[in-house]
Amino acid sequence: MSEFTDEELMARFVKALDEEPFQELASRYVDRAHAVASAVLHNRTEAEDAVQEAFLRVIRSRRRYAPDRAFSPWFYTILRNVCRDVQRKRKRREQFLREQALTVGHCPLPETACWDLVEELPLPQQRVLQLKIGQGLTFGETAAALGCTVEAAKKRAQRALKRLREKVAEPTSTPRP
Image (cartoon, rainbow, N blue to C red):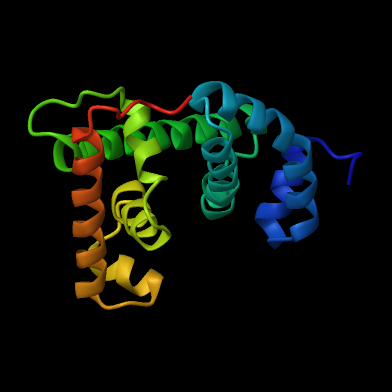
């Protein structure tokens, strides 16, 4: 497969939904995609997720690829859009934490410290907030993902938010390095 251009590989993938040309494309782009996503997001885990999502979007939108155009700009446009989605989701998550979990009207900690505090919660409470806030799931979806009832998911979220408020109210609360 290495003798084919990116465009030829994508054309073969679109035509036959053949895994081999897609795997070759992915191997050609994965390292550069990680570098781009890391530079944009400044977070290794989010960058890895963004690259995976970008490749999934390539698969899902393969029929929209124009074979007479270069693959590289098309792929990086998808990756850039995924990174923007991640940034928007992160901003919404941090905003929610400031508004709901911390103090009314004023967060005494930097935004990054807010999410660090979530990581100090018991694991069941962390998972609820990660799914509900981080991923934007409903309580029903969160409960299904965690294998608990909707009421249990709501109760875990309530306890988590209460603990976060208490942590922020402590005079010794400082962000972790």
